[in-house]
Amino acid sequence: MDGMVNENMNDEVQYIVIRIGAEHYGINISYVDNIVRMQRITRVPKSQPYYVGVINLRGEVVPVMSLRKRFDLEADEYTGSTRIIILKLEDQSLVGVIVDEVREVVNLDTNTIETPSFKLDENNAAYLAGIGKNGDSLISLLNIENVVGESKAV
Image 1 (cartoon, rainbow, N blue to C red):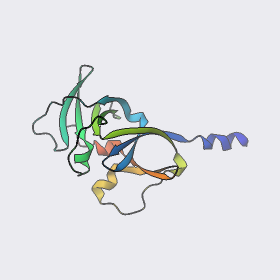
Image 2 (image 1 turned 180 degrees about the horizontal axis):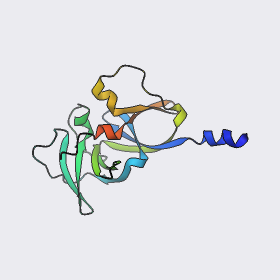
Image 3 (image 1 turned 45 degrees about the vertical axis):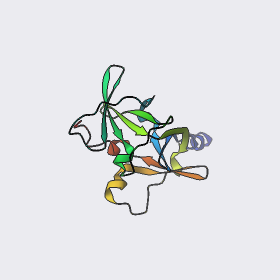
């Protein structure tokens, strides 16, 4: 009986907390392949407007998207804190996302993650996997497959 109680208590998922503008978002760490400093991005003509181009990562060409553009925010301002998070998707392809800052890694109890009950417009709702509680703060957890979805045309 006691063993069952303890098992449920360890239902934690690690999220990497990123900052885009004033907002903090969580990305499930299982998607994160690598985090690299901002580097030269080669532009690709006729790609989606939120794609800024491609980078060479260990000899592999990786498309890079701007989360700011994807979320219809003001243009990226690159600083010393800007990073490209390399994500490995379920189909094993890699994609980079530009974030203003990588803040921390947090363990969120799956029982405290709530699906948003408020009405979001459909585009934005698809990007959100849920809201995680980390102490007193709330973190919007991104649905990575939807955020970078329809993007394989690069």
